View (cartoon, helix red, strand yellow):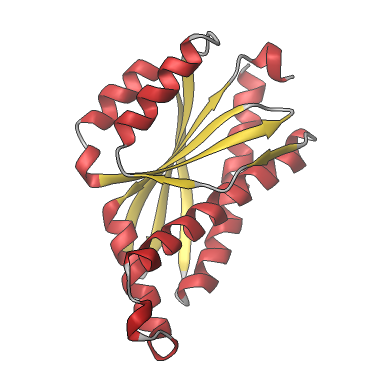
Length: 192
């Protein structure tokens, strides 16, 4: 298990480097990122942790399929969402029409950012672990606790009690933002 977590951590570090490059292109500004660490914790503890900051974060969820099965959640700081939106609007203002400025634009930016991060992570998993893993397009979860509770109920039946949480810092134009990647897998015996 320790080697598996270490491999996931290395994949996450590589993914953050790749995602930083892609996000830099998306927002036309230098983005850097680093992985602060990984925590293995019971899903119930994760619920308690995010319950206190629910109004400060946004969740993005996707199902993982293939040789690893489970769910991957990004927990994104709301300030990051606002900062991304500001950068995109500033950099692409000449190309955006007034009628394009809707909530859909914000959702699209969030989904694209999540897709970059998740896609980089899954790609690195495939490369490092020599597995075939894919994911569905991410969906936004405004009520993070409700989504995690749904997964808790679904996964208790699968005897999946623990989650891996990767702690990431992203830096955009001198502003630091936090992103957590929550990796919820079926028991490893069923995956590998």
